Picture 1 (cartoon, helix red, strand yellow):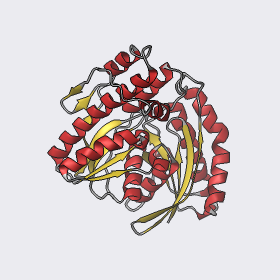
Picture 2 (picture 1 turned 120 degrees about the horizontal axis):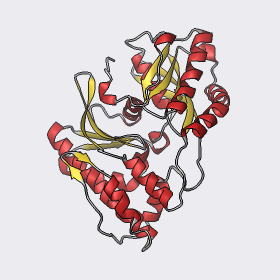
Picture 3 (picture 1 turned 90 degrees about the vertical axis):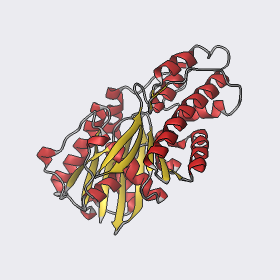
Picture 4 (picture 1 turned 45 degrees about the horizontal axis):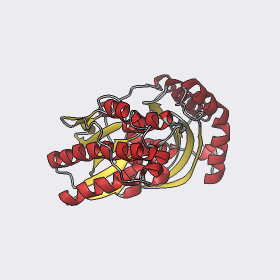
Length: 327
């Protein structure tokens, strides 16, 4: 079975084609165009959606060419229906609907967060993990039970990705800022005490963001290092508590922030203490991409025939723990 996945939740417009044989999946192509806002600025939904619209035909054409297939070879089309930025989501949905309608191909709306997890499991081999989903749109600790992903901790305000991006923009970086902050943080080991806010098994980053901005004048490198160490220590604490509670023997990190090596180091230490296997999504596929959407659509096609065009939708705030997983 061959599927096309379309991702357009935020700054990335991506199309990917995957082939599914049994329980195995193979990525045939994954093409992306990323909207880059000016330095010091965040994603403007209208400008990002215009970028996606202008690049959608190019990305789709390159994706098909790289995979060596035509649209008529596709068995299903899936698109990211949420959560995400409304104008951006609508571009992907319109492209998916147009193709599905014209070529009479089954269409599947996919939860973007679920896509992160399913592709992460496929590429790492994790079977039944506790999942840490950390990106610009999510900061959640999740475990699967009775056909749903259950939340064992999340952010109470901004996400870990937003923390890094908002701080990075305040010192002149362009979004996404995580790699620039990681590089700057690696140049020092001078820690400056910052607010540490864990509430139960949830975290709060807004106070940490404000406090870090106040120490930038002393040293940008020290501020980046201290921000990372504090935020990642908070995440390590709540992940360790969730591992103790759920007794999972696997930990999987997915989402754009999964690419951060320091976060992986700290969580590997947690896993060692619990005799737990550690998995992290490959850097190439940790951020938003069409492969996440395509693979999840292919999994859903095992138990569903797709939806009618009238039932396709986009939902900016579509929580993962509201999704029934029947496959």
